[in-house]
Image (cartoon, rainbow, N blue to C red; front, side, top):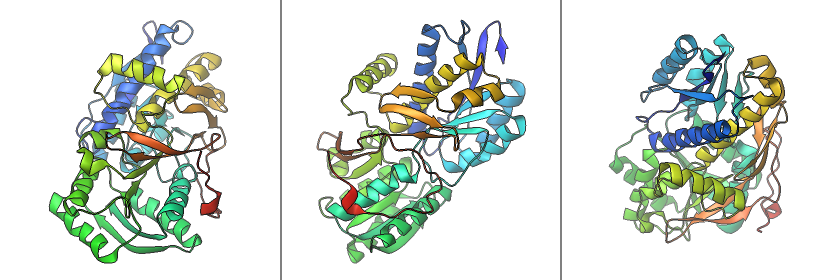
Length: 379
């Protein structure tokens, strides 16, 4: 909605959820990008006006907050949600109101909504690269450990198919309730001691990630032989760990704060100037930042935030993001991204050990893919 005070946009990030630490980085990056858009003249002279919703910890809280943003605040679009369960809770709200959701987190794929744009990785942009790397450098026996909700189960289904295509084996698949007690993580990791997999594929999220890595260290397992590999572990999680708990484990993502390029440095400098030098930056934050700039560019070409015009303008929209040039694929409303793999070092920094040479077009429906570990070449 355009008013004399600007274009109101909704922000839907929780400070109370299991993934609050990462959601705060996404909220920060969204606000930073809005500031930059407004400093550059906004949308034809009218600023973007962020309207933040108070959000609790459960999917129903996100749904209710989305209803308030759409019905009371009359925002035409929302930036936010994080876990797949919260995205799925919000989608019926934006679809019924014909608003737009901009989702900036990796997810399991196999979804399309005409009212959602996806800025995070899908399996052909992270799972394929991670599985190939692990099989090539560690081995083809893997133990799955995840939380009890949709993302871990679907991500594990995809990863199982990738491993089995390459002749690998899933030695066990274990799910724990969200917010599981520390001792439950320790019991599960005893399975790793007994089964001796080549890697542990973790789909734990948020605070549960920290518990898993602490339990791993307490059992004195060796990441040089059997690392925890993940798509979700990020800089907020590592900040909550000691160097001994974090070092040697591996994550796949399009962006790491350690990426040493001019666009990445500019983003990090602006982020830290606004939110503090010790504020972590995550791949989700980078995606949230980029989505705002993509929306602003499309809105300028569309003449505002009217949803049908904005959707058309977003088809093929590009932005020189901190990770590299990103492009929205109009057919799927997902984003071309730059896959990377990093290992955590003794300073708790993500050292990039693989980087794609070009952006990878999204294939959210990974139904016909042949995994070739030898095809993954290191830079």
